[in-house]
Length: 145
Image 1 (tube, helix red, strand yellow):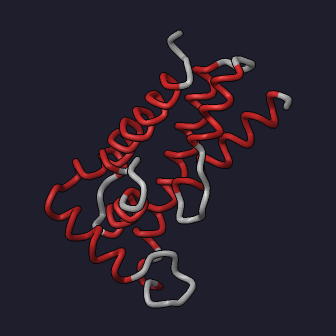
Image 2 (tube, helix red, strand yellow):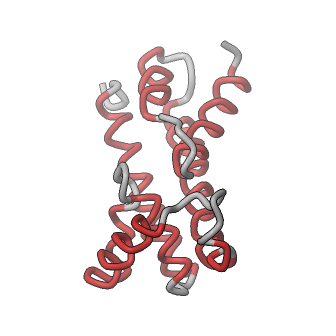
Image 3 (spheres, helix red, strand yellow):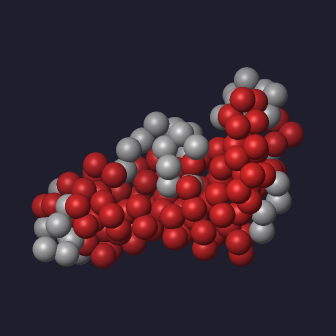
């Protein structure tokens, strides 16, 4: 696999994984690190950037498209919104540190947009959460060996 394709695939998969579309970037990142064919820090950067950008799309959806939440095509169900809103109201902006987590992470980033969380709070917390998760995966794949 050439480098441009590998990095593009990783970015796209990480981006989609942060949205509601089904994608798993962790396995791809692990494999790309494990092969030792590519710069691991660049892989980490690309995966983190794609995933954070996907979360930013969720924030934007929450911020600007919430008026369409009762439409069938809207990606979050009312139950998802309710659970995430309760969680977010209980733990505040610090709940964004769980934006990496499966199932609850995407709704949390969307609800943060609905609740009007400013980008200067949103981005550092999501970057820390997503980057930290990918750093753990890189470590498991042998980054520090």
